[in-house]
Structures are given as C-alpha cells and as structure tokens.
Image 1: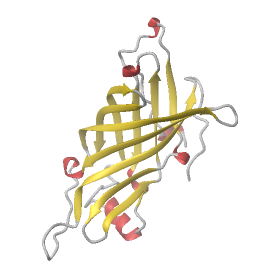
Image 2 (image 1 turned 30 degrees about the vertical axis):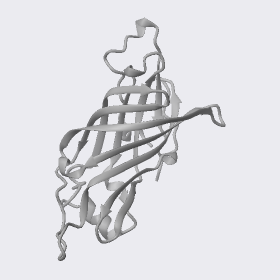
Image 3 (image 1 turned 135 degrees about the vertical axis):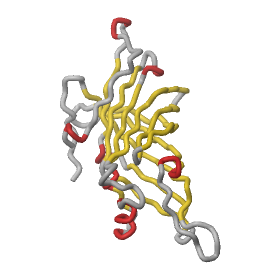
Image 4 (image 1 turned 90 degrees about the vertical axis):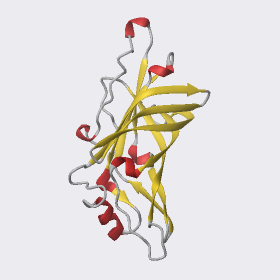
Length: 207
C-alpha cells in the first residue's frame, strides 16, 4: 500500500504533548482486515459483499482515551458481491458513481471508551454528502507478532441509511414492495500495526 493511498489522520487538537500524554499511531493492515457489508434483498434474501481496498490510521491515547481519533478511507471501486454484473451496476452512476466519487472517508469526532468497548461518533463522506455515523468497536487482543511488530485487533460495526447519502436507486416488484432495503450493515475485523511517527507503514500491499 503506497502512501498516496493512505490518508494520515491527525491527532485531535485537544491533545497537548506537554501534559505528558503519549499518543500511539496504529495503521490498519488491509490484508488482514476484511471490510464487509450486508443488506436485505427481497429476491435473494440478503446481499453480502466486501471492499477489497481500504485503510486508515488510529491515534490511541491510553491516558485519556477520549482524545483518541481515527480516519478511515474506502476505495469504492473495490466493491465485490460475488456477481460481476451487479458489481458493475453498483459502481455505475445509478448507484455509487465511483468515477465521480471514488472514495468514502470517515473521520472521528467523539470517542467514548467503556471497558473493552468503544463508541466512535464521526462524519462519513460518501457520494458527495457528509453525514453523522456511529461506529461500535469491540477491543480485542494486543500482541507482539513475529518480527517484533505490535499488532492490535478490533471488531467494528456500523449501520448506514443509504438514502441519507443520496443512494436512491431501487426497483419496484410486481407483487409490491422494493428490491433493495435502505439499511446497510457494515462490519470490519480490523488488525492494526503500531508505527512510530517517523516510520514508513511497512505493510504488505494488496494487489
């Protein structure tokens, strides 16, 4: 993954290094972090898919967790649902319009930590619109991997209303109702790598 494809989140402005706190920078490893989605489809019950190319940066403040922050980007053209014809339609101007809006970006605004659970409120920019989104995160293990890298594990979940982002396409059924539901469930099994501020990311590039 090259640096051009990985926007770097900035530590929150409230962070004051003179107070002795230390913020840790962690980068998402996209090879080991599947980002999936699911939504109801009247005809086939549910559509399940994933984004093959995404990434982001977490700034974690152990002393004051509320000062932590996150920024995540998604390459929308990397969507796959197991049906190439459907994927092309989703990428088209009728839906995601990836030529005009190639990326979605989420930036945190408020982080709340309770035990091993984190609630992140932020803004998601998608399809030319920016809306409030809440992400629920379960904290997993942190370990030292082979080679000495520190790696952390998280499970993140969010629910989006596609209509709120101008994704209005649908199709009426002859028997009544619509083909695709508005609610989209997002899930990510995230593995992050601890990096120093002056380090390169050192992560494998996904083809």
